Length: 322
Ligand code: NAD
Image 1 (cartoon, rainbow, N blue to C red):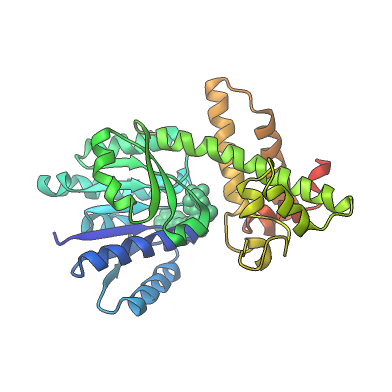
Image 2: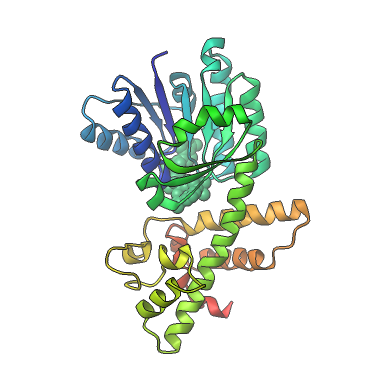
């Protein structure tokens, strides 16, 4: 098989990650082939057109189904919404991997960057590994901004050998590639991180509302907190108040909360934290309250489910009153 890289799931994150992965691979090996696949055909076509316009002569094929993409690629990256889609996509990929020649299996690897349930990820990885192909969980932190800039952090779960095999590929899309432990460990770390993030974005919204009710200018308040102990990503990068950050920053609130990290995906991540807490006998009083708030937000204003989760600032009843 010629050197080929496949990417399945060209959404907000996947399209940016695939762009970096393909453009850097193409720069090193102009005869490389690329395969993409998305359940929404327009997402794949838009990516293909963009990429070929920027890199004339690049081979980017659209696969109709995930198994077609898997057969054609040594490295396959998946970036899907959650557990259900990972199960569906890998139930198509796994039989295709089984049918590969043993030499091809040895040189093939699956990288799943989706944030999903740890045990589902472990089951899928086990099945892939049984076919003779490597697999790691490699969820990311850094958001759409980090995906675009190629500065994501990858939290990797798999064997030391598998980590070594995927590190160079991940380095084309990210800056910090961390081996967290065996299969599922990357996801465990990711879910803990997003537990903090989900709570953090709400408390930043609360503080910004409280400050304004005290008569403070949100730009002044953000600047002061930004150099104080309350500083955090939800304030200094993903600030929920329009115009609160300088003109050089452009958080989703400046575009009516379009783009970024969908509230529905944050609700899903808080649910993943809650599930794993139950399984491990861990209490998460703040995590539970945040999960309830995001769920209520989506129920009361379904349109916010697709918008960035910093729109929690904009969601009546004000977060301070939940
Ligand atoms: P998204 O909804 O924008 O993209 C998902 C893509 O997968 C879509 O293009 C969708 O059409 C495609 N898809 C769904 N089912 C499919 C199937 N069966 N076959 C092929 N394609 C399919 O989501 P996103 O924001 O890109 O997030 C992807 C993952 O990354 C999620 O697990 C999310 O939690 C995680 N994540 C997101 C961010 C962020 O800031 N957006 C940050 C870190 C991690």
